[in-house]
Amino acid sequence: MPWAERPVGFIALIALGALLVGVGKELAIRGILLTALRGRHGKTVTLLGAAAVFGLIHIPGSFINRAPVAFIVIQVLGIALAGVTYYWIRRVTGRLWVGMLVHAFTDFVLYLGAAEVSTASVPNDHAGAIYESILAPVQIVLWILLTASIVSVIREDRRPSAEMPSSGGPRHREALLGTHPNEGATYFANDSTSLVL
Image (cartoon, rainbow, N blue to C red; front, side, top):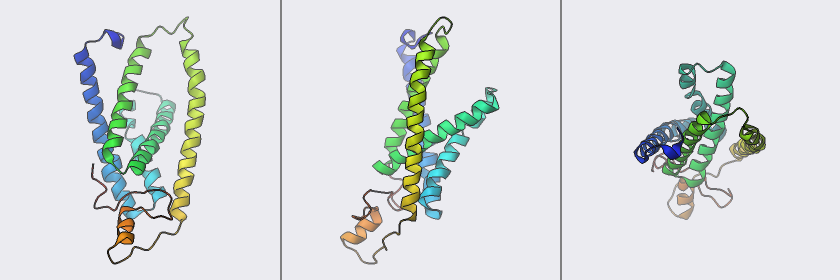
């Protein structure tokens, strides 16, 4: 049944479910896990570790649905790419709730799209070919952005960090908040404030 024909209450329930999933996964991965990785490792390990775990936690659902192994591998890589995106949302905004909302919205849109695709008649319909011709360039651009973001984090990880001043004042505040004029970008706040929504 197309989504346009479903009751509003059903769609609201799907939206609520997507919101809860977004909140839960972002709290676990970009909240707790990311903070733990960042406290013990550099930015590169944090980015790749959080993205890898995010991709891997989706495997059980694929096994339950008896997906082929090749599909699961591609799915894990694609979801890890989404994990890099959520990492950057957290890193740029400094807030966990922004990633939660983006994750929830993404899942909601995917649920809507999945229902439409599963109910569409694919034979004699060229919509699938059009979809695939658009999807391939988008995926190439996403992989290029992924590569650029990983290279950026590796380069930043190798850059010598500013020493943290021991006294108060603006330099001390900049060091604690992670904003230093020579850095060019804001990075994560210290561990005591990183889980602030």
